[in-house]
Amino acid sequence: MKIYFPVTVIALFIISCNNDGETNATVRDANNVTADTTFNLTMTYPPGPANLGQDTSLSSQIVASSNEFVNAAGSGGMMEVEMGKLAQTNGGSNDVKTYGKMLEKDHTDANNKLKEIAEGEHIQLPAAMLPEHQQHIDQLQMLKGKEFDKTFMPMMIDDHVKDIAEFEKAAAENKNDKIKAFAAGILPVLKKHLAKAKSISSKM
Image 1 (spheres, rainbow, N blue to C red):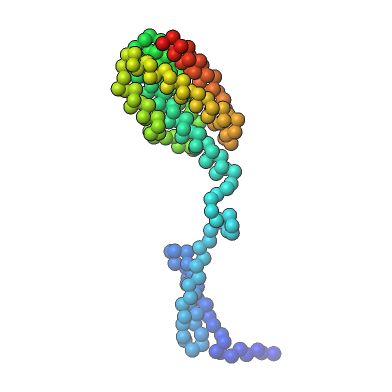
Image 2 (cartoon, rainbow, N blue to C red):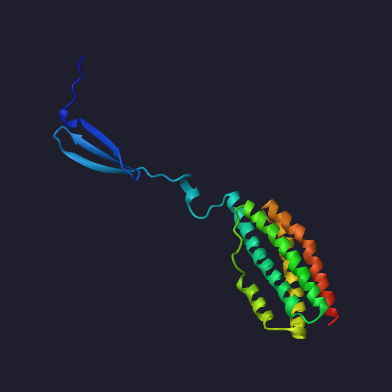
């Protein structure tokens, strides 16, 4: 048995893709009338609500958390190195100069460790000091001798108290194990610096 279809309902679809990922369908019916309809085939993955708002995946949380600490620690480390250099050139007492030398060496070592971890974890270090840290450098650059010492040592006490609190928090809570271990490893150094700063200040 043969089945006949009315000519008027038969349509041919000629499909082509352009460079933008869209598909153009040319519809031609029996009366040779054509109509171009564009279907956008661009898709995002994953679909649905996961594309809405901020990425909440574990990996993004790890990077975000690590970045916040690394940014502050990287800037603070640069500041400590520069302060150590200034103490050696502008300091008035031998104790302050010796403290500056220790500060420069220990924080240079810490900065190198942080840089190595950051590169391995694809975390970007700050290119320059944060404004709050740069202000300390600008202030100390104008001072020399006893005036430098009296400003520098209390500043070292305050800075290291804050640093210890931040490093203790990172060592306990940071989601990146390598950053966590770094913070824990630097804590004894920071506590040594704080104790020495208090000792020198007590003699002034």
